[in-house]
Each structure stands twice: as C-alpha cells, then as structure tokens.
Image (cartoon, rainbow, N blue to C red; front, side, top):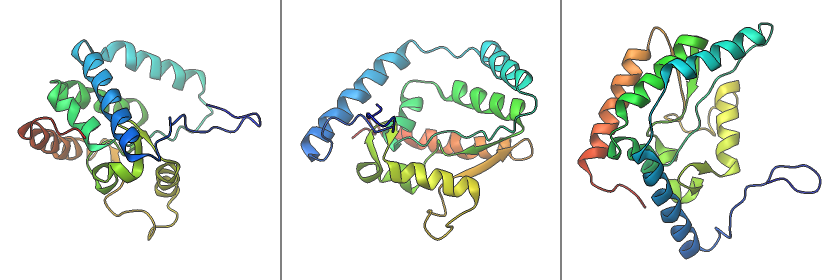
Length: 178
C-alpha cells in the first residue's frame, strides 16, 4: 500500500496486537494451503518469461534474489508436496541468470518469524534492509551470518541438497505453522 507521498507502507492490519497478529498469520497460512493444493509449476513458461525479459533488457544488470519467508511458509512446500517444484524453480532461475541471492530457506530470520514477519510471506522492513545489506555486502555484523546465500551453477546442487534436507525435516514435524 502507498501513502499520499507515494511511499510504500506494509498493509498490516494492526499486527502490533499479538492476538490479532496470530489470527492474521493463521488465516493467511490457511489461504496458502488452499492455493498450494492446486499449484502447478510451469518451467517452460517461467523460463521463457525470464529469458524474454533478459533479452529485452540486454543492457541491464539483473540482481536476482528470492525473498525470505517464515519457517511455516517454507515448510508448507513440503507439507503440500511441492519440494520438486521448488527445486526446479530454483534451478530455472540459476540457469537463466547464472546466480541468485537466495533467502527462501530456513535461517534464523525465518525461525524468528514472530519478530521478522507480519504474515507468513511478508517480512518487516528491517528484513528488507538485511536483504539489501547482504546483497550489497554492507553491515556484515548486523546481518545474521546464516541469512542469505549466493547460488550459482557451481553450487546449485549443494544448495538444493541442503534445502531438500530442510524440507524433509519440515515434513517430519506435522503442521509446522504458527
């Protein structure tokens, strides 16, 4: 949502109240569960869209990153049987762009979702600053060491293996949600 000065502001229906925040979190998780039931990843269409964009903007430097999500949101991939789609999607991004700053996995920020997220997939502004700092190589002491990794063609298999282990651990704990 944007204010009158065209400044983006999170649309957070009073998430300062812990009870309301918990209710919002669970309601949004429920919505994602419904969406993921019918989700189907189209590698061909996605890769074509990215390739077309890259081709159209040849002179641009793309800084590609994935957004951090809360632990329950990440674990929903396993709960919904979407691990293979997630892996394929990540490989496709790396294949097209060569490297990606990756934040969509389990780390201390995802684990501390009560502090850093106002719903399962939308983070607080401080997390956005941490993403920018990690990408730009700024403020190394202020960004948790486990937050953010660079995935490229040389380490994509290792990164996916790590995330596959994390998703298996999620699946072993039923309903890892809030």
